[in-house]
Image 1 (tube, helix red, strand yellow):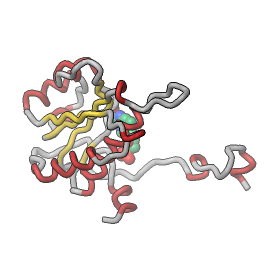
Image 2: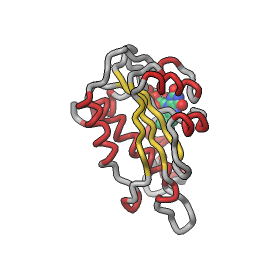
Image 3: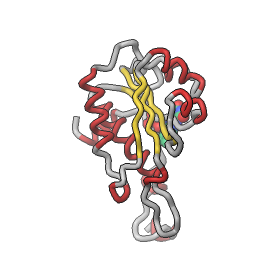
Length: 176
Ligand SMILES: Cc1cc2nc3c(=O)[nH]c(=O)nc-3n(C[C@H](O)[C@H](O)[C@H](O)COP(=O)(O)O)c2cc1C
């Protein structure tokens, strides 16, 4: 699969088989996270891998979709905002860094034949408690990881002209 094919093949998997994720594949996914770029190379993130069945069941309190907590692995990307690069206007880039880490995880997973799904709509408090996150470390994104049992859907996306502008966002410039 080349990179364009990989991008097209990735989709949000919301049904997983019981098949375990091989240790070697999980190691490659975690290595992709480690190699992710971060602002000023601060690496202000921690990744928590949840494989234990009881812990995954407990995670249902944070996000109750069965396909999420019954997947063989759950990965949490946690931000350490206090370690992040902060722009001169005080914008903290922690969320951007964590998103890049998760994207590396998700794309590497797909390349290995594994499904995943970005999850932001979870309750953070149970995640902090279940994963015993120390103060200053916040859960930012979760994903289940495993083998898909559903099928890819066609991608519904805005047209390029609605998303990409050249030189200026003035309407006349984009229409010419
Ligand atoms: C930052 C982010 C947060 C998301 N949170 C959720 C979520 O909480 N639950 C969910 O089912 N999907 C979630 N998604 C998946 C999106 O709904 C999905 O990526 C989008 O609809 C496009 O579909 P596709 O991933 O199949 O291409 C999230 C995606 C992103 C990028």
